[in-house]
Amino acid sequence: MAAIFEVGTVAPEFALHVTADQKLTLSELRGQPVILAFYPADFSPVCGDQMALYNEVLPEFRRLGATLLGISVDGVWCHDAFAA
Image 1 (cartoon, rainbow, N blue to C red):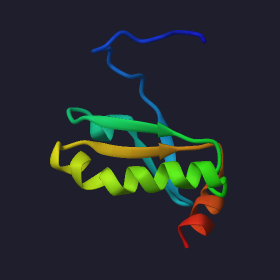
Image 2 (cartoon, rainbow, N blue to C red):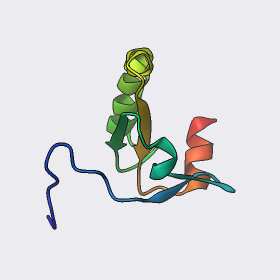
Image 3 (tube, helix red, strand yellow):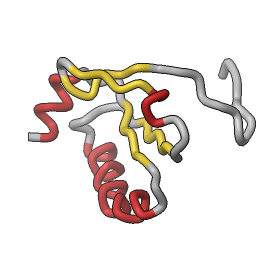
């Protein structure tokens, strides 16, 4: 592990695809809580269960003003197929 950030450390900037033609940068969410949920694969049963659990508590995250970002190694086309 290259580095472990201390609590309160500002996360480094990054940009990720949210759709095939749209990106989201972390700086767009600056000033609000962000939950990064890392998972390996869209079609993995365990990962699907993990994302389903996050989906169940999503209203609570939103109530607290937090944005949930799911991050995986799968490509945007795989995400679209999984969402469908």
